[in-house]
Image 1: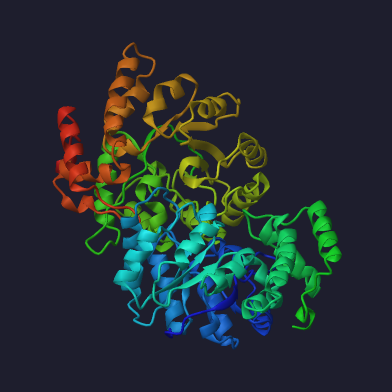
Image 2: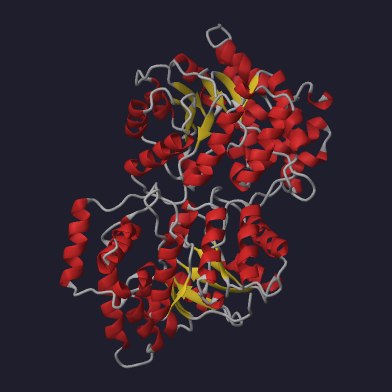
Length: 306
Length: 306
């Protein structure tokens, strides 16, 4: 694992499934290649990747296939958190061994109301268990789903103990005040990514590092353009245009909608599949999404050719 | 897996860890033997077992060690739910192959607000994936922790499709109205277990099957006695006595308190260990628990000799 730190846009890459619901490594590889061509890094195994619906063995096999297929490991930030310490250690170690640029790490999320001390012990045990001085961990704060928040006090304690390892955070709280607070701590080279491009302009203006967003799967180039040009005069207009696309996807179950748009734009119906407990869009939802995207002149340029 | 259905008391067996936080199979075996001697069945890998802090490999190794150590598989109801379908299938199949009396199955608990349709698909895919006509599944409804409730509509749909497989439920909602509703559906031979002995007398009077409760780890014989004698004149007094013990443990973080009492009563300090994100009791908490248990003349008879 290199000591390079991430910035810019990353996609929590959607995971394609075969007819028997097994992960489809070759289709995932092609989607990752397309995302890289659109200036998006690869936060595989995120919430929108259905990562927690995959076994550790499946994630290791997919990661191996991506690297074997030519994806530069430095562009990969796989999600490696787990409820179970041995699972988190095993997957994180594997990512480190492959040379991934970092890992995005959920807290253990089964027990609720756990203490900062317990969460510190978990992250600490992962870091010590992996034992790689180049390991770069990005914390994953997503209380609406995990129900286990990461407090500023906890992050400070982790940074104090592991300053070379704790590289940043993805803040998917949906709470701008929290993202702003993270940016104002003055932590050296700590990379703050907002979990939605709705906050991208504000995050960049506050000193943030970029954005790791579901809709980066379908709208990567315009989101990256705002990241690259946030100081330009038209940044506000770019933000407004991004928000309009995001609002469409937010009207529907997000993961199923991302997959439906990808299926339609690539002409590849395999993308429609999700693993339980998620379900595909209903016919009415699919018709609504298609109408909304058509009205917005939405496209995924270059997708059909990969 | 036999078609016998469970009734009575089961303990979500606490899991002992070695100094390096690896699971301690021999110590678990001895605790299971003690629990059986106290008339408690073995719901290993429950919430109070720190099951989601264990990898699937660890759970399989522990289950193998218990059966190899002479635990009758029919007395085992291992928790086999998981966020990931392949993990749930693998562990459930293993339990079925060993001849376990049933499995207790959490819904996938990462995504929140999932549909009944998605949960039905998950359970259905597990049942079809295991492919054992003798499989006996007890659903695990624990919304305060999982945040993913199992609705009566969902259970009805599962029963309608898999009447020979869906054997019952553990209701850890803490909501007596829900337990009562489950008992009043008239579902044939559907076993309703309350998730706390606080509801045991009411559950038995309503036609329930018994209780699967954290404190069965430390107070099994008196809880079983109420189950066996719920129609006797002194049942109310028995319930009151059980409630008093439970209230002590509820004052503290439950799992750490169960382990502390077990450590103290067995003279085996190894029981104090928990895996992150849980933490052991603080010195103040431990002193408080000890004082409370002493005042209540609490004992775990026979534990020191196992």
